Amino acid sequence: MLDRLRLVAEEYDDLERQLADPEVIADADKLRVASKRYNELMPVIEAFRRYEGRLDDAEAAREMLLDAEGDEKGLLQNEIDEATAETASLEAELRELMLPKDPHDGKKVLVEIRGAEGGEEANLFARDLMEMYVSYAARRGWKVATLSSSPSEMGGVNEVTLEFAGDTAWRNLKFEGGPHRVQRVPVTESQGRIHTSSATVTVLPEADEIDLTIDERDLEVDVHRSSGPGGQSVNTTDSAVRLTHVPSGIVVSMQDERSPLQNKARAMQVLRARLFDLAERERSAELSAERKAQVGGGGRSEKIRTYNFKENRVTDHRIGFTLYRLADVLAGDLQPIVDALAADERARLLAAGDPG
Image 1 (tube, helix red, strand yellow):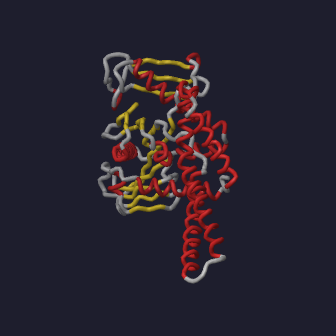
Image 2 (tube, helix red, strand yellow):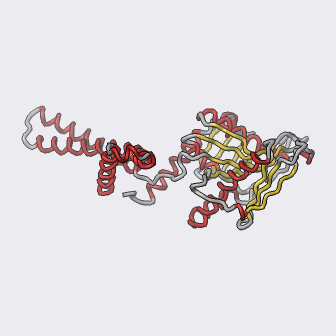
Image 3 (cartoon, rainbow, N blue to C red):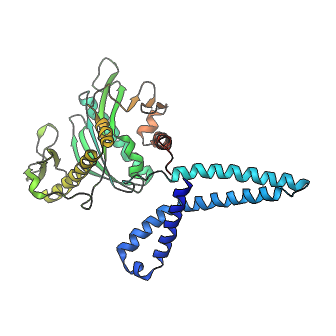
């Protein structure tokens, strides 16, 4: 790890020189790239310099200890012990800082929620999840936009696509993809029996045109009249848009805007994210397995998380983490679960090997 840190320190010094170079300052693109990388490396370099400083302190104290007498010996030994403990702590911090950065950090996030097994109760649960994520976003200070929504007969949602914008949105929401299971007495249940239903959540980083270019010749565009629950018309003009990407077979429909141009723009946004995700999965077998596992079949036996109303319990099955604060979680207090999942991810990355 130390050899890699020294290389990073050399890169940091070079970037510092670049940022003082008039030619770089005059080139907006070069300046942006250099500044971004410089800021990424700054926490690593600051920790590395503290680490090297405490190593030097310990070494100097050891040399002085050889000639020390009386009380001075105790003081120097204390300095050595403190410096040694701090270097161990800084080394652990550096190992985390040197873990590979997620390339999607900072991007907007698309979250697709669909009712799965359980009929109308699944759609009502999908609405609960939607409201949970919207409340969570408000707590985190993110912006939220509804790109599309298909309401169900009893006030739930058949499916909804949300866009979250915030520097930490992907970092926190990326763990939410997969089948979510609810155990409760549905509003449609007259005998008071507990039912198990499920909804699926798909989490995608937004892809822009730099990430992915879509050939218009690969698209089939269908413009039709918007419809609401039960199929009734919600618009008197043909404004809904359905895009079919012929090579992949991916279909995206949008009808929430009044203009077909606006609906097409939003449909393209979702299509680009799905195609970007598909391209990433094709490049990496590991990503393919992970993304395929996100939604599964949406069945009740497949789940990443269970929301049990009778026990006031939320359990994330991936890490065996349980909270008995169901109402708080559904009100948007997701951070304890997200923090536990993030800690597990860091531990797995560290266990996979020394990043240096």
